[in-house]
Length: 254
Image (tube, rainbow, N blue to C red; front, side, top):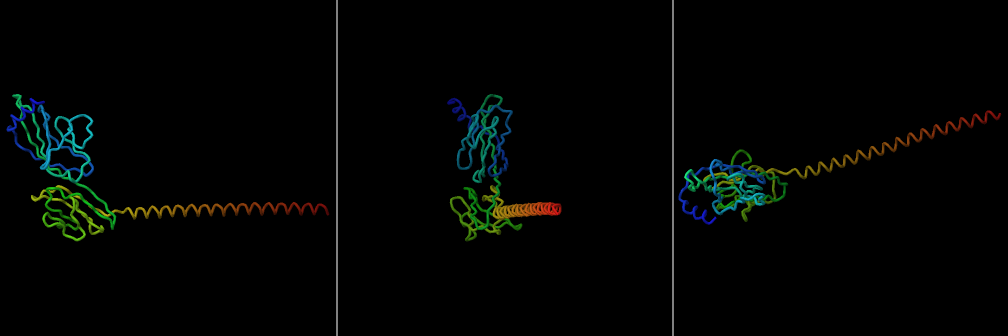
């Protein structure tokens, strides 16, 4: 391992051309940063963003969110909004002369998510990443800025704190599509916000339960009434038969 590290240092200057790959992932899902470099003998890989080196698990049965698959593909699972951004995958491989070379792949990871909020509740979006320059909203065909770096939010109902863009007392007018862009206009995060129908659903279910209970009560009452009617008819016939029998006995005695 030490010899390999020394060798990597010696050939650090040997870098092939960069390639940019655009990748889109769904919040909570997973994405693959494909290296498409299967025909080479890979000696090592490393992954980093603009701000940090990202550990990549290269063992079997990895428990972390970032791990290698195949010879050099990198998987990121359980995606969150803050995963959006630029990634650089360094691939160290042997050429035909058994010399170590490095290839750098650049990835632009765009995260898409959906949020459903009840009216009157608080909407918190963890979208103000380190390279976010502005946040725009589209609800009627036109994009309007709701937050810009250096100027903050555009409404008193919005707050900017700890990387979160928060809307207090959510209303229907807050629904729509929000997107996060950097200073170069690159879109990193897209969030579709809708109004939750949870309360209406609960009310519908409650009404349905009430109707069901009502139907059962009516059915039971009708059944009881029917039983009483049948019992009355049977009882009336029984009395009538006893009366006839009594009349017959009386007549026979005369």
